[in-house]
Structures are given as C-alpha cells and as structure tokens.
Image (cartoon, rainbow, N blue to C red; front, top):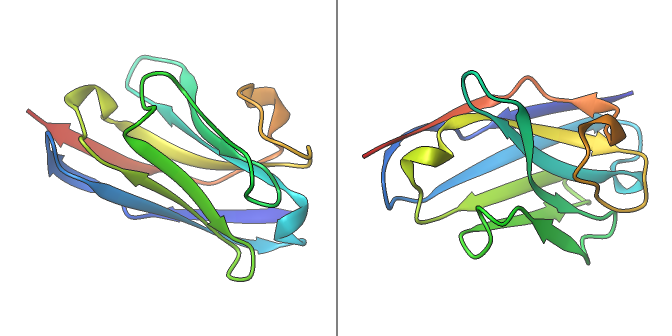
Length: 124
C-alpha cells in the first residue's frame, strides 16, 4: 500500500503561481511512477503531468506544457507540481497518483493509488 496526501491548493488569480505537494508513505516510494491528474466539475479526470521512478523522465498534457513542472524527491518521498501562469481553466481538484509501472502513463487505470485531492481555483 502507498498512501498519498496532497496539499498546497487554494484560490489564486489568473497569472499567479502555485506549488502543489504530494506526500507519500508506505511502500518504497522510488518503486513507483507518479502523476498528477485533475478533475473539473462535470468533467473526467485528466492526466496533467507524470514522472518516472527516478525522476529522469517527465511528460505533460499539452494544455499545461511550458507552465507546469513536475518533480520528485525520493529521499523525502515527495512529489511536486509547480504551476505558473495559471488560467481559470486550470480550476479543478488535483490528484496525485502512484503506479507500479516503471514510468508514467496518461491512463487513469495504470495507477493503483490515489490521494484525496486538493482544490485549485483560479479566478479571472
């Protein structure tokens, strides 16, 4: 089992920056690829960014490429999502997810463990 707890969400204005954190506990964190997903009201949960076990390879949804950065610190069992130039359409609940796969996947079914989510609201 891997437990994930997100934090750092909040209400910001368009153009602002925000950093989300995901604290992991349980099994060896470095054995899991990790991703951030988000879900806006009435919409499906979508892939935002992913990072492989060692933190060497990352991937981003086109909608956030160049604005968001995913990183991890395996020693601290933490994953981060740094978000800049935020837009109202970034408003969603953001979830951290962990997969036993070697590298990230954009598919929800690839992830066995999920956090409870943290709300990000961007006002115009």
